[in-house]
Image (cartoon, one colour):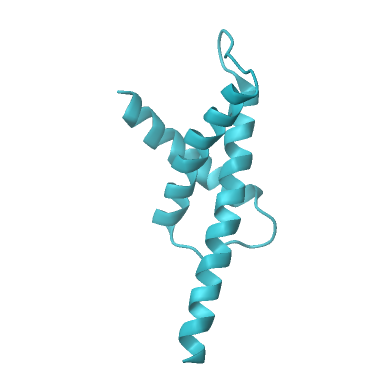
Length: 92
């Protein structure tokens, strides 16, 4: 059940990360955005616990904000990789 929760959260966090990322990051496909969201949730929660976050009763907003920030960074990295690979294809 936790895997399904991570996937659903990853979809939402990936789209939020894409929204938070600076400029128009529409160069990456939706499946890659979802993967960035899932990675953002997993890595963000790990970073949160690494710095002493132990959760709280109810919704832990700090953990979710960290996950969104990590997803935004992953979306930016994925966009840079996609742009670089597209420019290499057009140069050849």
